Length: 240
Image (cartoon, rainbow, N blue to C red; front, side, top):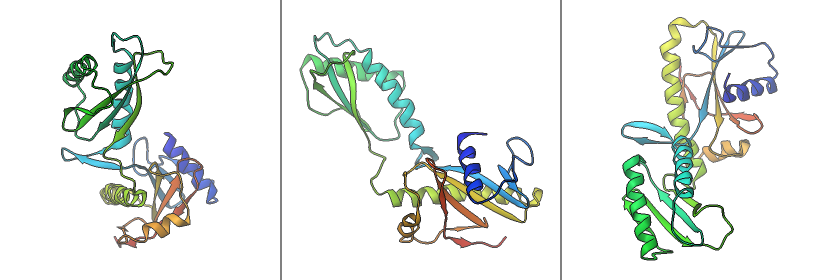
């Protein structure tokens, strides 16, 4: 059971259910839980963008990219007697492979040699960096002091709505593909929110400004990743 499934199970306890079976039809099968005659499917709700025809979760790329970027900068020998602070800005699609880091290395060497500090430098259309001279007490020659993910927007409600469209569409297909092999009287969907920390009645009010979503699931819940409490979404119920 992964951490999102554990949060969903905790939410079902909050609803008053205790006869919760995990993977009732076998490992890695649909649905994730059953409560008597109710099948419950679980999915993480994260903000995704389309890259090369596929949807990519922003946090998956961001985590791995920044981890390697920090290591790259930490190990960079500037030849200076003080550290530098770097900020980076990026947008997908971005391919941070060995060629990318080789070009970045040459660019940083040139920036340091010509003392181009405080100015944004691009090595390709979707990536730029800025170096600042720093007197901060750091153990590294260059440390990552800031990053800007250009794919992340500030409109939380819009991001949530777009993520809901993708998640519900994906799980809708899974439900319809399994209809002939399941015998549940009702099917629920639980979405664990990784977009924003707050999930409450105001979330429903905010989402109400957009066209109503539609689904064949009997109930769809949006729950917080922090306390596993949540709300039931309003949407157009499709008859199957």
